[in-house]
Amino acid sequence: MTNQYVSELTNTAKMMMSEGKGILAMDESNGTCNRRFEKLGIATTEENRRAYRELILTAPNLSDYISGAILYDETIRQSTKDGVSFIKVMQEAGMIPGIKVDTGAKDYAGHPGEKVTEGLDGLRDRIAEYYKMGARFAKWRAVITIGNLIPSDGCIEANAHGLARYAALCQEGGLVPIVEPEVLINGDHSIERCYEVTQSTLHEVFRQLYVQGVAYDQMNLKPSMVISGDNCSSQADVEQVATETIRCLLNTVPPAVPGIAFLSGGQSKERSSAHLNYMNANLRSKLPWRVTFSYARAIQQPALDHWSCKAEKVAEAQKILVQRAKLNSAASVGNYSEEMEKQPVLV
Ligand code: 13P
Image (cartoon, rainbow, N blue to C red; front, side, top):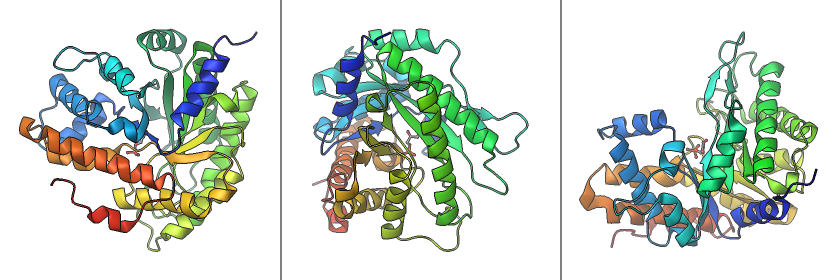
C-alpha cells in the first residue's frame, strides 16, 4: 500500500532540518512543567502554563532560528489571551507544529532502575486528531539509564520496539516521527561507557525501525550526545564529546535520515551550544545529515528564570529566549563562539 503522505512527510522532515534552524522542545508534561515552576515559586496552574507558552510562541523573530516547536497535549489546545490558537500563531510565524505523543517512561517490569515508554494504545486515533488540528510532526522519548549492570538488552529492545511502532503509526497518519532514544547523562560512568550504550541503543533502534517498515527519509533522530556521566570524576572536553558523538552516529545512523537534532539532557546552556558548534565547525565534511538542536532546558531555562510569572518581564524574557535560539542557530552552522555569550541581551 502506498502512503498518501509520502511527499508531505519527506518535505516536512527536510523543512524541520532547514539550514540555520533547530527545533524548540516545549512539550514538558504538566508534571515536568509544574516541577520547573515550583522551583521558581510559580503557581502550578493551567493559566500559568498557558501564559508561559504564549510568551515562547509569540517571541519576536523566534522563527528566524526555529523551524518547528514540539507541544504537549494541553498546549496544542490552547490559545493566546486574545484568543488566537497556538497552532495558528505558529503557522503564521512559519514554525511547524509538533506534538509529544508518548505517555511517559514507566517502570520496566522485572528490571529495577529501568524504564519503558508507553503510549501505543489509541495512538492511531490521537495521531489523526493532531494531524487534523495542524500538527505535522511528533515526538516519542525513550529513556535508557546507565548504571551497574544496566541497561539490560531487554530494556533497549523494548524501548526500540516502542519507538519503531510509534514511528510507523506516525508515518501512516502523516506526522514525521522524531525518534528520541535518550541515554541519560546521570551517573558516574565514563564517556567510553556512554559511547558503548549509545551505540548499542542506536543499532537496536534502527534495526527495529527497519523491521517495522519505517521510512528513514521521512523521520528525524533526536539523540543524546556521547558524554561523560554528570558525576564522573573525569569530564571529557568539548572536542572529545563532539568527535565521539559523531563517530557513534556515523556508525549507526543511515545517511537517508534527513537530520539529527540533539536534546540537551541536562548539559549547561553554554556546553550544549559549544558541542553542537564543534560538530558543525570541525566535522561537517563527514556528516551525511544535517546536525542541529532540539533543546528544551538549554534554550528555555534562562527565559523562564527571568520571567518567573511576572507580566512586566515578558518582553525581556522573550529577548533572552530568542538570544539562546540565535546562539544555537549559529552553533548549528559552526558560527558560534564563547565571545557571543558576552553580548548584552537586554539593552
Ligand atoms: P532537554 O533539552 O531539556 O533535554 O529536553 C529535550 C527534550 O525534548 C527531552 O525529551
